[in-house]
Length: 603
Image 1 (cartoon, rainbow, N blue to C red):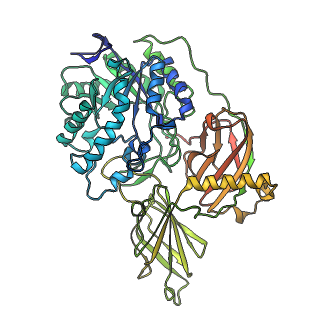
Image 2 (cartoon, one colour; image 1 turned 45 degrees about the horizontal axis):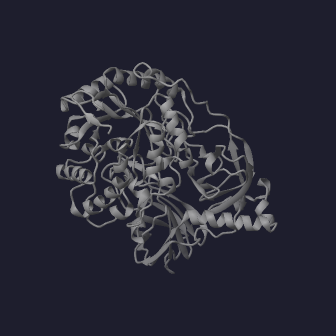
Image 3 (spheres, helix red, strand yellow; image 1 turned 120 degrees about the vertical axis):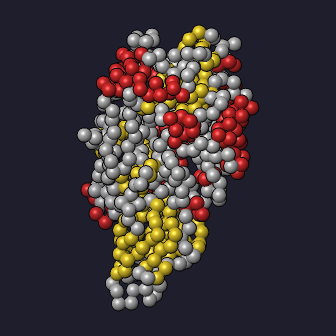
């Protein structure tokens, strides 16, 4: 039996000092066909361990419906790590942050009235116990002392930045041990005294998270933990992006220097991220520290392995640093090749917007929130009939909401009026006289950090037209995945029947037909298994799909200008692209380009 323990100064593998050289790969941000490739490239950089969070809300979006198949097969991911001769670190949360929707907590959990997340509240702990037992059913037999690969399991995540409920952390330790986890347990916090105190618990080894000033941060950690191995379990070698911002990078030389300083101190490390991947679909989170900032689709993170899984300058620099402290394989992964370039004609699909197969609909006096409608989709359409005498002699009146979360498109009698943005602090606009008001609201991402976890989405509170409160609302949750699927099916049927609308050229579509909301569809030939980069620079705001796979959101405000199309979803021969556009496209075409475009860099 192999053993892995915490010694006086080092981790001990079968009793011998062992340094963890780890890198983060989130299985839920990488197509499962690409897991082995990414893990193998971590080994080629000199790493000996792979770390991953577990995203509870991905596995159990509906309470009691647990999914660990396909892209969520954590066991298969850990088995690949083992096949590649590497160890694994598992971080199940239940809260993970990770710039992931709602910090990984399921919406059904944070919707529960008066439940206090991340606390010893019994109403919160009861479902947490069920979740952790399911996770540990997967992890327990894969521990290193059972001939598996898992060497560490983390308790919660940067809890000292959120709270200091000692009973909560102690209960997570108890549940974890009771479930059969025998490997060492850890916590992680930023190396600030109050965070290390609040996030620590007996029975779990303290580790730190930082991306610079390594010697200073490790010294702070040592003051709070006099013995045992030093470890930075989140070495921030890059950063994430938000819509309307810039593409964040860290200087390669500076990151390599800080990594070298960390390893020279004898510490273990986990690179956050080694490979970031992609927030496919509507899985990106958001931050709100006084201003709401929804996060972009790409999670490239300026990591050593880029979003499409190829080595960067940072990969080679880190590999050289690691080689000073540990053996590094001779083999190197190849550089990213240029992707195929092509332009694909798009045509309006034969589906209605935005009401295709509503997954939930409800009537109410005041507008219902997404949670009250029980919407799992990122879009809800609200409608009401305006009072007959609302306008009298006025041609227009102000429409005012208590709050809009997060982005709303307003129309009157099917005529677009304008847009309201939470990020810009907007909650009102003038609307012309009319009869039927429609407000389509997009949840741009649930806050993943801080006190706003689980906050309501949609139209919050009341809505007023001038001095009159509007009542009698219908709220309809719109399943964008089903909408894309219906559009693709309609297109394929039309194409087989020779429908001219299914093959309109870019120049033939009139400007009016390109105004949103609209669903556009096209087809293209490709070589199967080859990555593509979809240029979105001439589109407004929406979602894109290839062969039914949700590539994610795009938005003209940037910084992101391309969407990554994993080669695993590209078929040999005929492929179908669907674009759900809420605003306006410049031309009815989709362009695939040779290189990713993640936006201008921070100066």
